[in-house]
Length: 270
Image (cartoon, rainbow, N blue to C red):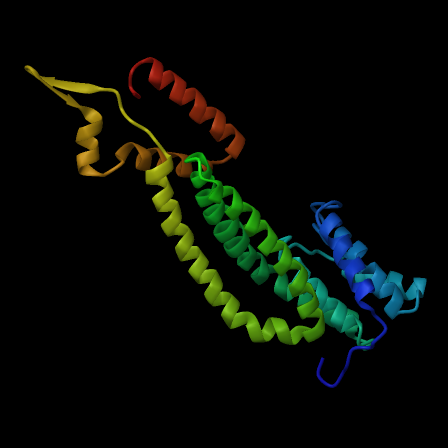
């Protein structure tokens, strides 16, 4: 897109309309043929209609390209949306083709970044820490949870406009930094999850072994080999089970509940 400039036809109000549509409909018309493309087209329509002067026939042709397969992390698609609208704003004859190609190229990498930063770092790690603090009776946990949501929403809103103003340049120049953040979030995620296994999972065995007058709890014996042995084994089994065919999170929760009740009833678990 070198040598082309954006037209000034779009106002901040137009861009806000596109972003609001994306917020509320990004996943609504989801289907297994084109995934998120329905919500995408609905989101860009206010901008496209103004850029191309409401030419219905021209828009219909362009939407054929925009309706192609599209699927990315819902909290990262705002960046792609802003950059694609910027490309369309140039009114270049190949603008739509280039916008869709860029969308296709970015949806995979940004999905990975979104998983690492949003789901792992913010939602899982910080959310788990906040929940644990709340369980301990600290109001700080609730405050952290609220602040996390506000930070995510602020960044979501801001990055859309930054991506629009800088276009493709924003994504290409920030790719290295985003990759470093992704790697750091992944490492942090593993560390925190490991700590949470020891602090929040509580599995203790009720079986004892007798040697004459000496009674040895099996739980203490196993913990001397691997600290929090029951916790580690339980998490490992659940992780393994979730990878089995036809196993879902819902089924696993029910299975864990049933197993815990039965094993407690017969004295295996304390």
